[in-house]
Figure 1 (cartoon, rainbow over the protein chains, first blue to last red):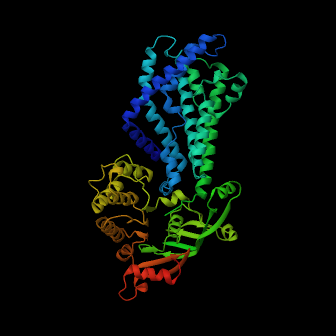
Figure 2 (cartoon, each protein chain N blue to C red; figure 1 turned 180 degrees about the vertical axis):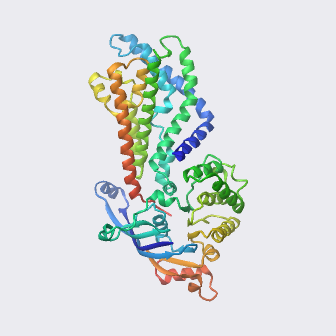
Length: 267
Length: 278
């Protein structure tokens, strides 16, 4: 276990080195957040009756999404890992007493957490100061907050497990571009990164809620603002847990199979 | 001790003719060609021996190293490293009769060190020391052992100034010294060196050779070295295994192949020609 924590630590240290990236990331996320809120506000003004969330909940959703972007931006796959597999440098990792899957998983977690905790604080602070309903307010009660954190961490687990699964796929294919583009663009839409899931037609929504993509950011961001409550919320949390387990188990199995038949080409 | 018995390995290579039409055809129907990289390779290496493993490009050197380091599965054959069974694809009936249990990759790699001259194991963006610390945890090396090993390696490879530098800012020679140190932090008894002097200048080459020699003398580390640099072989090894087209062609000493006062490179070229493997 210690070795994986060590990976975690090194990655975190590396993440702290990139200061300019953090500052420019925060700036981008403010712009993006305002843009999204303006657009959704326009929908709201056009037809309040048809609007599926409250304006407060929408804004909380957007600001949390921006604050924890590093948790859920599925397109931030680790190029280094895929490069290592494609170039064959992974040979070195295979020469180590390590489980490749666990190592990649730890690296993914570390990457996202180290990036998120630097960036979420200023965004949440500023969003908290914005006038209602455009900002973000404290959650209704302590219980709500605990559930939000649980959903957030489960969501992060599902994201990292999905990404690790993609890395494992790179053992089986020469170029990762195809899978990468398909996977990232599909999950962006289906996880509720473009528009929150309640904005989809109801029938589509019912299917989407069952998919692993909905187990990523959708639950945490809606639990916080009270948009997702009661039985529906528990079901969503349960599904998150199930998807986390399924994705990790599947990834581990596939990785085991890949390790057995891997061929490192060239000198 | 390392033993390989009748190890075979072949690769499947997708082939097609050049051109757009052919590429389209290959989308639906691929033709594969089996290329045998290793054919019945057998040899034994004793503890503490230094062996040069030579042969032209594509002879099967790297495949052998990869099989020995546990990252490439052979098609058939039996491989034992340091008393542990690594691969055995032999007769299933013998297997059922309760033979030695196969050692897992993770268990195996704990006791070997590998340097691939053409690849890097150091973390690019952080000082070398951080990579070393990580390796300490990966191999679960205890504090005192780690400090002792690090001290010795720092001394012998002259790393003192390099440890605080990020790996990306090292020259190739400096980096290679760090790579070698990284592979030896856990004090492996067997060291595989795959072209460790490739691209190095004369000074670095000598430093690397010198170090390998010392390591072998002091710790009795078994070293298998693949290289195209015959001076490496001359300086380090007494025994040479020559492989060509996947077969072991010769297993003997450097003197066996040397004729008169011909240079070592010329001798080798002669040898390749004689065996029709170049």
